[in-house]
Length: 501
Image (tube, rainbow, N blue to C red; front, top):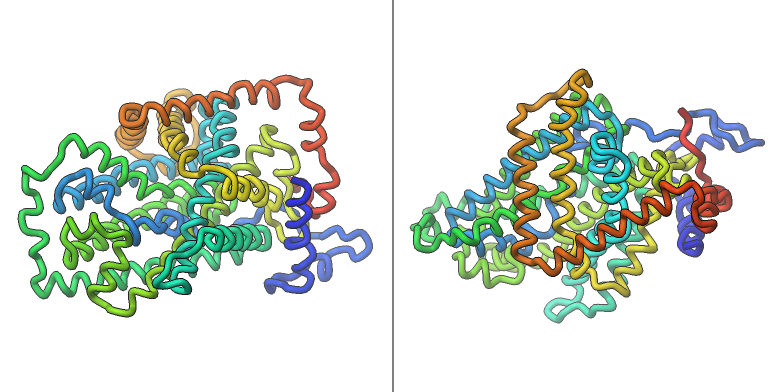
């Protein structure tokens, strides 16, 4: 751990003296040259505007799936028409969840997302279990999976038509993770600007698919839509699994709530950003699938290893070589948005006393939560090279929906226990009720379809209970934990200080 912190301190503290991102250095301009203390307040600043908020949500929702393998819904719904209905229905259900989180974000003006809302509604014990599972498994494994997709597709044009060696993928993945960590450590503004650029890149890629597809549709290429709702092909038993795939494809709408304290005018910005983003994503997902069906039959789509590549080969010839590049950019945007958001959860948890104090400190010049950003770096690399990432995600995937459902139930609970809480944005009660029921139904579906992996994941999550009592509840904590919590050497190496209130 010390080695990784020292390595990152070289990157994030000393290299900026040579390579500056164009930001004013307060130690050289406004600060005291003798003490090195900046005059400006050391805190996380409100730099997330409406456009940046939209880019965070869209940039994290749209990953590689829509370009490579959007077939889970088609496979389980049984027909082209029903698959499009499921895409739209999942978009509406996700919008219900996003609206519920918009209310939570405007009445509880703290960063941290799920963790903060569960903490406010149900107390520190339940919140810590969520934090524990995120820290040891879900976030490192999820980041590693997105980064692996980035590593594979950024190298694919170089190695075509051969396959990419696994060691090359892992090295490219490591470089990608390091770049994202470095960017988030250096500057909130540059992180947001690059996220906007990457979001427009992936939207451009989707437009490049949609426009030729709709052109084919208007030319009369409708044979794949004939008998789209044929009853004998619809598999009712598979529809719940189709909805599960669809909800997973829309996951990411909650990430803006992780950075609430950095959002300009959150009462207005958060609901607007959430609504605009969800409408854009719903339209993109539905129209992209319509475009695919104008060129490919359902059988061809299910047989394709990379749907967007097959689509481009049929309509655009050699342009299909560019598809892996767009996929890699899309994955990089998802990594960037995810890390930007989840680092704030660790920052808030440290501020609440549930993680070492150093994680709630801010870099004195960059005004970024540097320790909270890089804390996942060693864990993610260890999982990448030594762990079974996909098994870990199988164990833990149901927990995402369980805790999101608990957070939305917390909204309903707070309506009755704290009716006088200011609520600048308020949704009808049926919206959180329907969405929380959907989340718990998906948890039940996981238990039914894969009881062994779900049981193992549930058992891993229960280890958070003894961890809470050892690290949080008991006053006599382990000596190594006490040393880590008050580690001044890390503070000096990373040049971070507590937030000024």
